[in-house]
Length: 267
Ligand SMILES: [Zn+2]
Image (cartoon, rainbow, N blue to C red; front, side, top):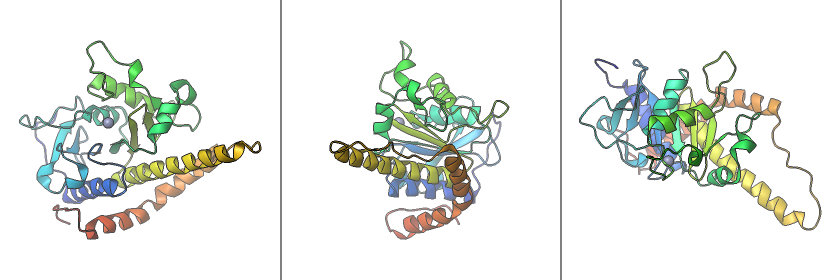
């Protein structure tokens, strides 16, 4: 537990607020869902917005610090944080290299979490794992799909796996949550936002592919869908890593000049 805490540096705080706005602008978040970032100088802490719609986060007082150990607020007077902050605390605890987390109810992704089973996807090749909270509820848990405690959060964090047997970095960037949404991790806010936006767009593209095929398949058999193979997926991940600053600059300009969002953190 940190004895004393300091505010996020302005550059990271401003980036956090921009990230919240961008995720709303691109419909990854609506009134629900949240972004978090690990504290820049105190890695045992992380920051989320106070319980407000992400589009309305604007000022330093909207940012709340929590302990990674148990998601408790550093300020004991802070009582109305997001219920699902355990998603973030348990991921930051398990993966030291993760510095940003997004939890979203993206509507184009949810059908895939409903259609798949854990046996189909979990930790299999480059596929996306599915977290099914219904298999994890204890008798005392409220069964509303929300990740309400450290035990349920730790089980979600486990779904990201490890990139290798020696590594403590996450093996997956995205985990789908049955009937609920997705959680996305990255080493920084820019890449986490990029992964979230394009996961949502790619899910919509895949749905279009599948429905188009369904329309044609009654007249003649079609070959299998040609997804990226493992090598293409790995090389594309490298490409998006080094190019992520380009869309970030565009997205920041969109939300700063759109007139709807306010960012009062000094630049
Ligand atoms: Zn949720």
